[in-house]
Every structure is written in C-alpha cells, then in structure tokens.
Image 1: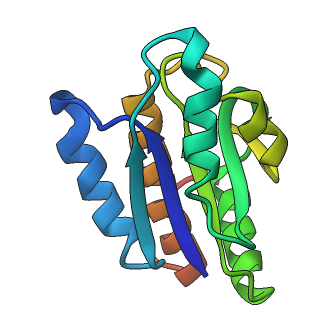
Image 2: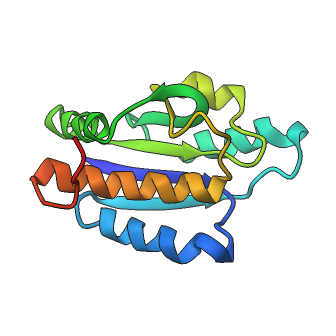
Length: 151
C-alpha cells in the first residue's frame, strides 16, 4: 500500500528540512511519494489547482483532503486507517494539502475522507510537516515501535 502526499507548491526554506526529514522517516514504513504541483496565486485559480492535484491521484487510491472543516482523527485512528488499507490490499492513499486558498470543490468531492489537523487555520508548510510526522508516527504504531508515547 502506497502513500502519496500531494502538495500545492513547494515548502519554504523555514520548514523544508523538517518536512523532508519526516517524509524520509515515513518512507521507512510505507512506499512514499511526494508530488508538488504549482500552487494557485489567487482565489480565482483554486479550481485549476484542484484539477492539477486530482489529476495526479492514481486510480484506485483513497483521497484524504486536509481541510479545517474535516474530521479530526487521533494518531491511533490514522494508524488503523493505514493498516486497514494495507490489509484490504488497496493500492494506496493520497493525502492532499492545498494552497493558501484551500482546496477546490472538485477535489473535495473526489475525497474519500476530509481530515482536519486542527481547528486552527494552518499554513500549508505546517500542515505538510504535521502530516508527514503523523504518517511516520502511524508507521511506528503499526509496527509497535516505541516512538508514540501518547494514549
């Protein structure tokens, strides 16, 4: 089961190293691919950005749209979700992080799940960092490794 992280735009200098570090760590547990598409520079281009993102999702993949209006999952729930996809022999999951104007309707309609990392509005780089860390954490939980210390 593959994990794809789709992002609108490249991470900025401030967090790019931390994002890459957790993506490398997550890649130890799941075949991980990261695809960055050109982000929209205005609210009027959000649907074009959504089309570019949706177009990069392989057939059969679940799509998890990261949006403040989504449901909140615990780290353990995310781990169970990823483990279940593997057991069900699903080809993979695409986590989608939009640009500064959010995700377009076409992408939200295509989403299998809408996931909220926080009730707060997060810059996309912070969302990417949190997502990469949580995918890494899910891998350690699935394997019973000691990284996760929470309940």
